[in-house]
Image 1 (tube, rainbow, N blue to C red):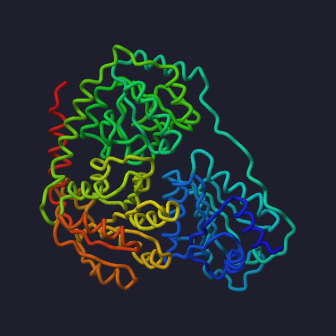
Image 2: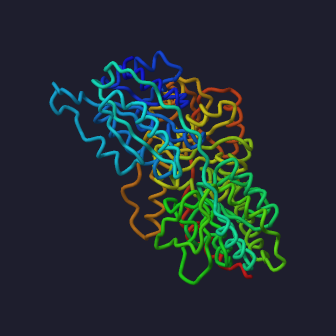
Image 3: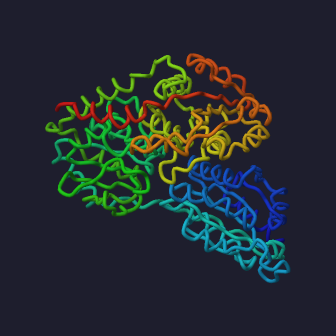
Length: 548
């Protein structure tokens, strides 16, 4: 068969449903082979959006999402989303085209070293220089992408190799199970738990999986040990749980950090130093246990005293089976912190000011979304408010990125979420800056007949950086811009557009858009003028004032 046919058969062999991307002339043989396969090509309007969609597909399914580009500029446009998958531990396989490797009649036209470019931001990158090696390279790319810690893998297929005739067959995936924690590690952590007076659980990104979530919920219900989530650990346990102490949306000074201060033992479940630290370790302060699929990467702010390495769900199950609630455990202060936190998050949640305060925005979205509904956030100051104030009730229902923290991912992530979960409500929440970075793929969402609501939080500025600028006492400079008319913009793509005129309009408008189906864009004016006062001054002051 033709090598491109073999490549596609190898992808089918891996269970690939979609290939996201923009083909170029170097991909035409592969494109022809895809047209005769069971795989759906999702043609996007920018390669970066294709990569974000593939990464989110991997995040939600555990199977690598696949994206495709041509050589040169197509490949360079993928770099941000490849880094997004790699830092965020999302399994993804990238296929890029290349000019002929045996004969190059066009000289160096469009040629860059894509292999060298991809090497630092992938787990595996490989040029295919012989059609016979396609089965082994595809199998290895998928294996590497899926293996703990998940991430990105890259294959380069030149157009002359794609056109070769070859006699080969795909390699079947092998059966494997993750290793489990050795019993001596379990015994040691159980000893630490029994000796502790104020144990605490911190739940991070790698725990955001169904089986792990089930085990953690059983462990918390049995022991009563309170827990905190990181931004990417939201929803592992229903955050309406009476032992949820909040989200470590910032590195220090918020209510959850008061509970961390009292803890003498932290079970850090699924933590990765790539994610902004939920707490800063200091020598001789408290014991920290690292519970993850892989060993801890030691950092100046993270050097755990003990580790449980292996399948996280099994590790938690072993702890649950080996521990009973201890009479000397004391969570009184931690639960007091929780009550103060809840009182504070209620403030502003019903404020009628317009433009909307972020606290009210979060409350309205939470009221509209069902428990299994998915919100996909871009990167901006609102991400902190949603992390703090939006209780996630199921795993992977708050898709935000606190690893690469790239703007432009909110819309493509929501589109991928809708493909994976067509029967669930999906809302993309973007700042006006982040939305415009990949806004052209509204056309893709409309063309694919997706049911999607997009909230554009409009402050006509790069609000996250303005917040930092103001907090540093610097001049307000260089971060303001003007936006298009988002109603006309939506309509130009065949979507429906709305501009909020009053705070109370948001909830009924969102409900109506969800019922109608199709793609809806809502321009939501927001007021971030109190961010420094609230996040940098009031919250730390009030949290610090809580007395044990």
